[in-house]
Length: 113
Length: 112
Image 1 (cartoon, rainbow over the protein chains, first blue to last red):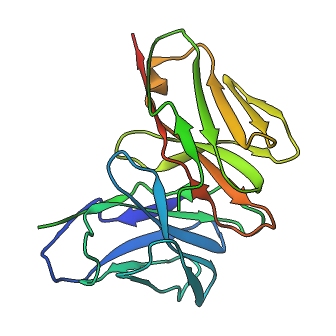
Image 2 (spheres, rainbow over the protein chains, first blue to last red; image 1 turned 180 degrees about the vertical axis):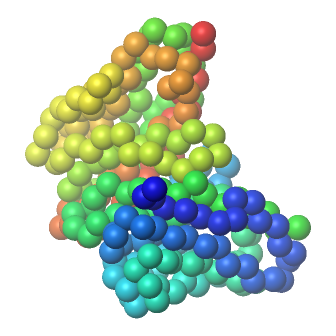
């Protein structure tokens, strides 16, 4: 059963707490991405990684951190420095190259109480 | 930054009718892709059109690309209630690289 998984589906956190969102893929893709989606909006890129042990900031990286220690995994930490973290978070992966098709996980909805 | 903007923001049609969505973008692109998102779910890739292509078909989907106007359209023919979803265009930059820039989306509702 190949694909990309995210957990948990729903996540609640108190203000001031860090929280880590999981993203795993078994598609053997080198590139992985994290996006944020606010209600009625498009996707905004937070971080992306083109290869293990390397990642780059996207358009809205402030208050977020990532790691890429394994090809299959790209966890996203939402830190207390993120001022408005309540959103829908989507992880995606692709083969590397010229803007290839991205495969998306089901998303994690984070709510800060 | 949002590269693409879809038009209209929302579209409501009857089953069996055709649905047309438009996407405009600002900078040169390598390709343009269309994705679909059901409410509360991840995105699903529909079709990719390269900058040197003008039209592409996939089943009931027809995509056109006009690089001189920096615009694309997605036509869904003979729509079904199951086509109800949000549709996003995404552009890949000239010069390659993996990043896509997504538009703001069109919410399509197909009513019985």
